[in-house]
Image 1 (cartoon, rainbow, N blue to C red):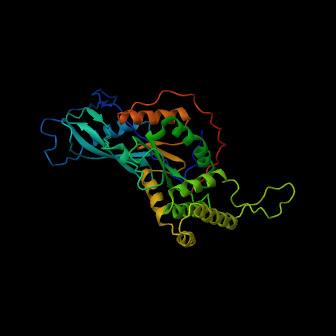
Image 2: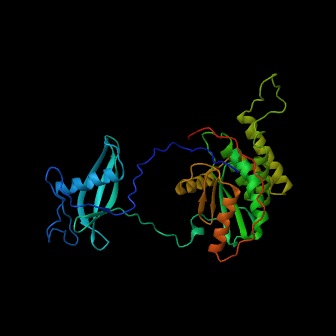
Image 3: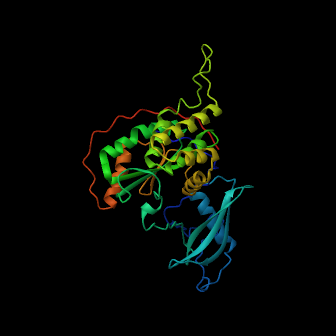
Length: 354
C-alpha cells in the first residue's frame, strides 16, 4: 500500500537483551571443585541497605547473562551491589554491559534472596486513555466529528511521494468504510534533509488552516497530487533526452502562488494570508515535529490509530484491523467486511538520514 521513508537520522542499534524466563543457577559441581552456594542466613541485605556481592556470585550472574543472551566475548558485563527489591523474595542488582571501550548501558535484574535464581522483568506504565497518547488538537479534520470513536493522526510530509500515495489511496478507503466513526487529522513532520521545500509547504498550509480548514485540505490534496511537478518551470527549455530540471526557487514560488490562489477561492483575508506566507514562521511546524520526535517518529507517513502506531508498508487490511480493534475498544461494533480496495505498489526508497 505504502512504504515509510527511511529514517530521518541515523540511530545506532542498541544492545537487544531480553531474558524472558527465570534463570535458575543450579548448584552443580564444577571441574575445579567450586560449588554454587546458598548465602548463609542473615547475609540478605537489611531493609534499605545494600550489600556488595561476593566475586563468586558476581561472576555467576555475569556468566549466566552472557550465556543466556549469547553476548560476544568483547562485551563487558559488570555486576553492581545488591539492593532490596520491590518484589517479595527478590533483591535488585544493576548490571552494566556493552561493547568493550564503548558507552555502556545499565539494566535492572532480580536476584532471589537465596541466590539461586536470576530474573529480568520490564514494567510499563499503561496509558489511562490510548487516544490521549496522540491527540488531534485543533487541527483541521476530515471524516467524522471530533468526538468520533476513532481518531487517526498522521505525521505527514507534503514533499513525500509515499505520503502522497497514502493520501490518495488509504484515506478514501477509510472514510468509505467507516464514515463518521473516524476523525482524521494531519500533523507536520517534514524530512528537512531530503525534502528542501517540505517545511515551506507546511508553513503555507498552516497559514491557510488558520483561516480556512477547507482551504487547508484543498491545498494538501493539491500538493500531494502534484508532488512530482513542484519545482518544474514550464517555460524553461528542456534538452533533448534529458529530464526536466527542478529548482527550489521555482518550487517555493509555486507553493506560495497555489496557497494564495486557494485562499482567494475560500474568500479569506488576503492581506493576512499574504503576510503569513511571506513571514514563513516555522514555530507551529516545529512544535509538530517536536511532538513527533517525542513519539519516536523518524519516517513518514507515520499513522496513529487511537494511539496505536502503524509504521512502514502495511497492507490496507491491517489498517482496517487496527481501526476495527479501536472501535471495539470504544464499545462500537465495526462495520461488516468489504472487498479490499486495490492499492498501488510503492517504489523502493533508498536509505537516507537527516
